[in-house]
Length: 106
Image 1 (cartoon, rainbow, N blue to C red):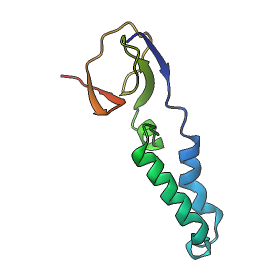
Image 2: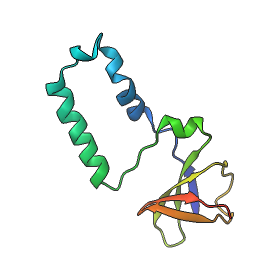
Image 3: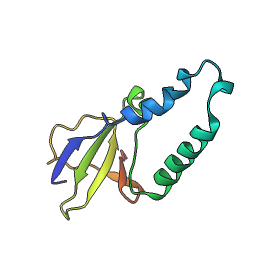
Image 4: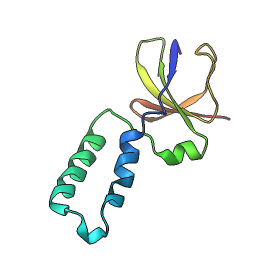
């Protein structure tokens, strides 16, 4: 790694999506003709894009996310249970998706 920065504080939009049904009194009061296309577009963008998002559940399970840049210049998202203090350390990782890595112990 040549650089690292925290990336797990960017879950505000996901949290908003989680709590949005609370703004209706009843689930039957939701305007599904509005919500269904929004959910479909969000799903297609997430499934086909090179973006990533973090669930607040990962934070509760003590996982941290970092943007790390490899020595070849490619930037990845790294999921780890420890807090990185320096980008100079060696970390064993496995590749989850094309641009998401997870720390591997063993």
